[in-house]
Image 1 (cartoon, rainbow, N blue to C red):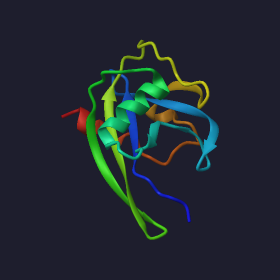
Image 2 (cartoon, helix red, strand yellow; image 1 turned 135 degrees about the horizontal axis):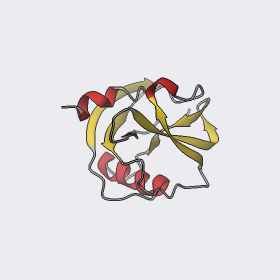
Image 3 (cartoon, rainbow, N blue to C red; image 1 turned 90 degrees about the vertical axis):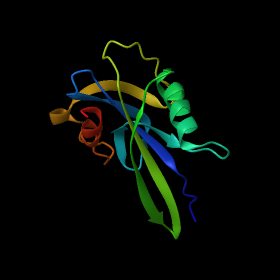
Length: 132
């Protein structure tokens, strides 16, 4: 039986709120090539610690202001776990030093031109939180 863990997913939006940052993974995860900053909550770590760790590991960024979007409950193989979604705004000019072992490339994608082979998460959801 596969071990299920809580995870964090982060949507990065540009300042115009018309693009989202997408990461092309070196290894295909769960049947898709493109996704968002994400990772599993490690033992002894809470979701807030995890989200900041993943951002630093995957993009080399620290000290970002994040807004919590939602917590989504999953039940699989008799186990319950959660995906914790966060959103933030980032200038398209921000220097990013992405983790080349896991990430092949990064791209700011307009919402009407998202990659076909991508994570099923809907990045438009976070726009509501940021526009408040």
